[in-house]
Structures are given as structure tokens and as C-alpha cells.
Image 1: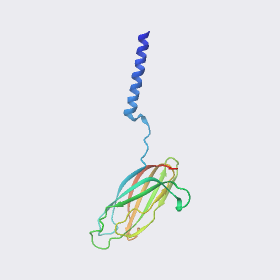
Image 2: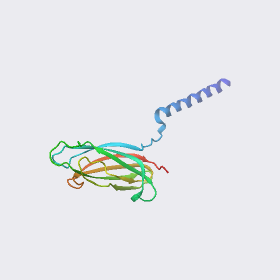
Image 3: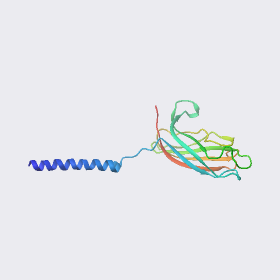
Image 4: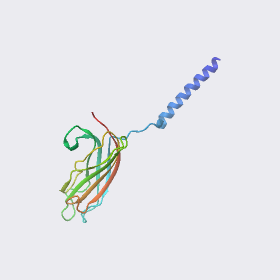
Amino acid sequence: MAERTFRRACASVLTAAGMGIALTVGGGGAAHAAPTSTTMTCASANPLFWAPPFTWTVTASSGESRPGGVGEFQPSILLSGHNDLPDPTGSIGPNWYGTQVLVDWHNTTTGQSGRSVSDQEAWKQNPRVPSNRAITGAGTVDFTVTLQTGAGWWFVNSQNAVCQGTIDVISRS
């Protein structure tokens, strides 16, 4: 009788140990959270016919902003970034650009979706990502960033670079 109890106890311990190892090695099927920031690169044709194509580097991060600059801070995607255009450019002709950024987003936690349009920049030799705040609310957010680059202004021979990502937007309050 004591031997049977001992075997059952050993079997239980080995089973528990095996399950623990399986969960540790296999991940246990637990969901993995999205990062709170991501950096992406997006290729773009050049709106200036004499200049070479270039690449944007965009960082999307969880943060907070106020709608219209007033009221309470709300969970948002904040963008920053630059491109690899030489500064000053080595090509012929004037090399001035305009930019605008669109962010189309879907919060998979809340089911809400929307579009954010950035500030606009014009007449920059080496444009950056203009200020953009997509107020998405807290949750896991899938998004598409469209960087519109034009000759002088964003809408003149506009060329689009498109990046996609997913981040967790967290509330700091």
C-alpha cells in the first residue's frame, strides 16, 4: 500500500514538473503583448524627377496628447522620424519638399477606428515627420502611416510611403 502511494506521489510530481517545463518551453499559449513603440522604414519615390528615391524612418510610440491642445490628456500614438535624403542634397535643381502624414488606426481592444492628419511642412530641404497625434484610446492599436512627400508642398507630385505596425497604447493616468 505504501509503495502504491509512493508511486502515485512520484507520478504526480513528474507530471507537474513535465507540465511546468512544457508551459515554460512552449509559452503555455499565453498571449504576447504588443510593444509600446516600434520603428519602421518605408521607401518613397522622389517627387523631384531629378532626385533619387529615399527612405523614411518612423517611430510610433504610446503617449498622451490633448485633443485640439485643450482638455485632459488622452492615450495616443505619437510619431517622430526622418529620412535619408542628403542634407544638403547633391543633385541639381532646387531640392525643397513638403510633407504631410496620415495615420489610419483601429483599436482592437475597443473596436474604435479613425484617421489622424498631421501638421504640414513646406519648403524643407530635408523634411522630417510633421507633428502627428492619433488619439486612439488605450488598447492594442493596428495602424497604417502614409507619408505624403511633394515638391515644395506635400500635394505637388505627391509620393506616398506606407508603413504598418501594431503597438499597445497605454494610459499613464
